Amino acid sequence: MNRERGLTIANTNFKFLDEGAYGIVFVDRDDCRIIKVLARKAGPEAHCAAVYESEAIAYSIAMKSDELRSLIPEYFGARKGLKIEDATGNDVTSEFYSEFNFELEFVLGTFVKMGQISGAVRDPVVLAFQREGIAHMIDASASLEGGRITKVIDFGMQDLEQEW
Image (tube, rainbow, N blue to C red; front, side):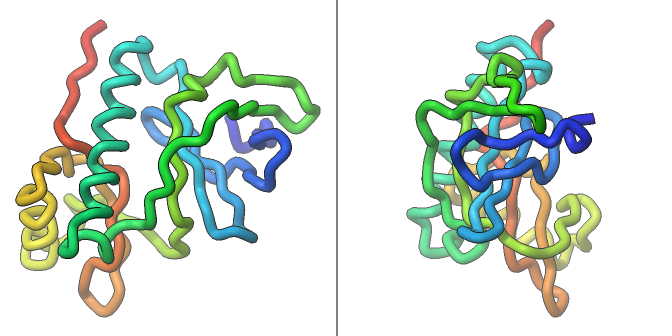
């Protein structure tokens, strides 16, 4: 649905790329960056804030880790004042928790869920994240090259169950 809407981040080159359970991903292919923004339809603000914080802290920790830094896209933090528009220029920012966003390096490749990767390849990587306190790997995806994991995305500090 959102792909057809032509969503963009106003006054930037960021255009809709994909969407997941919690957010929309925009890409600026010229600068090789993405911005993930959490959507209001994903749940109550308090829960989405906890999910955002879990992911943002996990990326910050991974960036500081010699063992993990090369396994994740470069993390640039949050942007302030995002305005999201549809293809006709309508402001649709109210559909998002626009303050719950972060910018990452855009990694070209095919990502698969960690659960689809053989344990011999996956388990040492998951353990490396866990050693840094990053425990939520169930939703993580990875790109593979030559039978090894090259990048991991969509991880967090802990699993957060949504309470309705």
